[in-house]
Length: 249
Image (cartoon, rainbow, N blue to C red; front, side):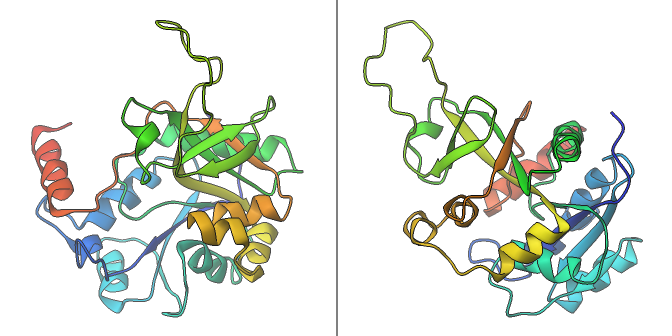
């Protein structure tokens, strides 16, 4: 798939992590974790790739393997704020906010997201979703999304949505449960505007910043991903990632 020009992927990365301190620089595979993410991002068509960080150790590591790093303010409250700070100094039309601890994403999914955004200039932002598995529906950490008939987000929730009132045993639900994948695409002017908005009531209730956009009436395209990336949040997650790398998977 051909990715349009004037697209940049920004990867927010911070050193602090409650469950896995120094996560971007863990390097038991022979490469720091952030390098695995950058190398996967470089497979997304012609998009430029930038790491946004407030830690000089991460910036130095990125520069050492030939990547591009931009230092951002330690006061950024979220990855989106860090992306907006980077985009204030760049002029690409579209930016993808890619998680710095998810090296297993499928580049083809991001290319479809970019293509969807490029095809409809009215869309300020877009994101990905996958079919939820049997455990995702009831896990608050697995965010669910419901969409309209045009594939635009209606709501994101940590609760199971939609609720099937009259399930038929053995029959698929009319509207499947979709798990949100936390990868976003923004138009440049949209991410700058988003960072200026104050947190909204639903956002504060669910602790989901994408609800800020919906509460302000923004349209969010939801593109179905083939598979969800495996995030690395704990030492066990990183151990599993290292085993997959050693096995060549």
